[in-house]
Length: 130
Image (tube, rainbow, N blue to C red):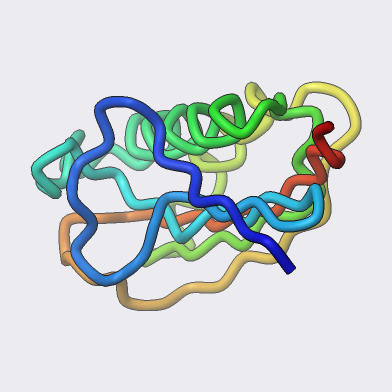
């Protein structure tokens, strides 16, 4: 099946061998997205809400670069480092998904950089483009 790498303008070099998103057969798979600047430094240290907004804005950029909108998102995989941040993360999450909500799961775990409080991976059904 043909695949297209989705790399929005201004994207930094990933920490590992992956691309921000892959579009295959109308389905966009967005890699786990952390609150990183383009040099892979954690932004908004200690602020779960601001980190979540940064992550979802980054994901939104990948979705838009693939030709979709956040309304096309069907699944989110959410990783958090502390359940104490759950309400803050959910409040920002609701801003990005105000209507029908995508399916999701959320687990507590360690992340690749200790100052990162949230990571989200996304699946969106963009549709086949002619």
